[in-house]
Length: 83
Image 1 (tube, rainbow, N blue to C red):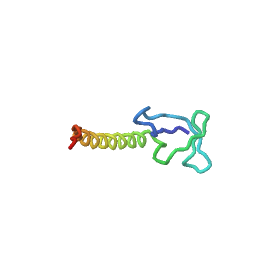
Image 2: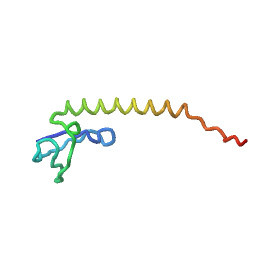
Image 3: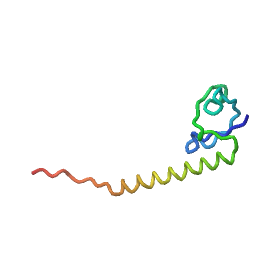
Image 4: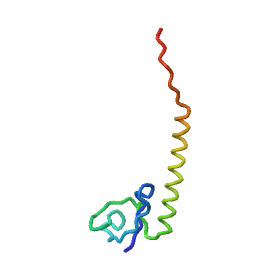
């Protein structure tokens, strides 16, 4: 079956692969000859679901980076005052 993998969507993009379901039907996929374990939200049966998941990942990453940027802008380094 054809699947879309979003595990690495923010670094490698959405990967379109042919995969076979493993024994538990949702965690193990054979991808390029290797058995790989994926969480349920890391692979999708439709491209539309994969795109929606990747977009949600992108939005969460932007929010995290904006929060980190606020902290970095507030960070100040002052020389240590010796008594």
